Length: 131
Image (cartoon, rainbow, N blue to C red; front, side, top):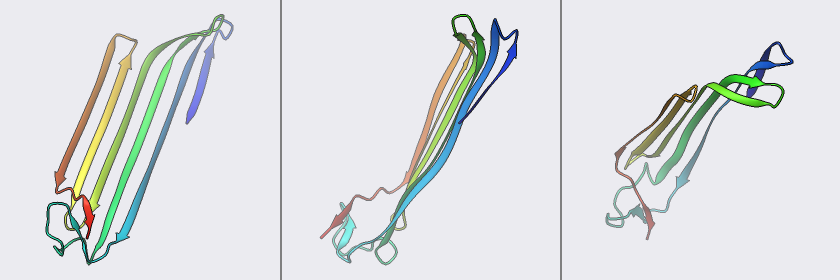
């Protein structure tokens, strides 16, 4: 994260700004037994790449805020605030499945507030069954 301030008449008011950002991922590659298959399919059905199957996700986020602070009582008024977060999850190959989502939130002086979430998915989700 990061933050900072710019003073103008530092005994009375200050402009502040703060924010943070991050990103990451995690993935796991499994080697399943030859009896493994997806729920709803017959045992012995082809699965993964020679029974190797990858599960994972990628994610990222950012948040920002800027405003004015009255120094005598530390009361803050946000002029702008915004954040965004994204997620992408997947399983592959054979069958392959992808889910993605994003959330965006923006506020300007407490007058304009906007929040929107988008998501999508495609492919065939596999609930792994052994046996």
